[in-house]
Image 1 (tube, helix red, strand yellow):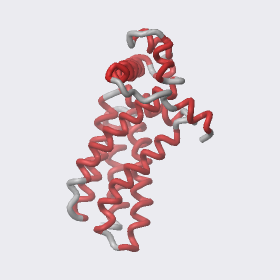
Image 2 (tube, rainbow, N blue to C red):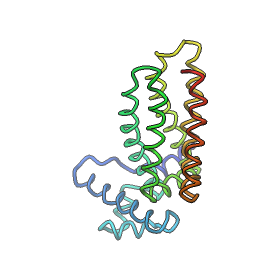
Image 3 (spheres, rainbow, N blue to C red):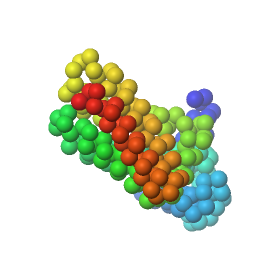
Image 4 (cartoon, rainbow, N blue to C red):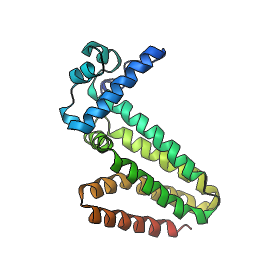
Length: 208
């Protein structure tokens, strides 16, 4: 990513004072609410500023563009995902626990996205914005590494590299599968998730 594109998708400054943190929290909360109500494309910086309780200049003081707001929203979503997945991964004490942990991570991720339309729009926006696509891939690599680092010592040395590749693909494809399931009616969406669960089991079974 070029330096100019990176500058457009990063906050102008990180908050240090409590007042600044509260202002950024208000901007982020307002943006997320608007995304859920009207979709990402209809949200404007001017509207965010007005509804967050301040002039548009205040929004630009912290964020150079809407992409920068989306990037921080995604960062916070990812931080929560890491914490939730980390708690599940910590419960893996042997190879026999891996499959159940994978099921819990898939179910937890699906439930979170299904419960909040704004998360769905945020993820779609990250995928569609060329300046932000790298965030999704980098986060996938990080979360996949969390699982691999925990499980790899339980595997044979010659299995570890292949396991890492498979886990990365499982994590990366999960986003698309969940988005697909949420566009379908309830029964078809359930079958889509269960079909993907079967694929995960098949891929993991070769290592377990």
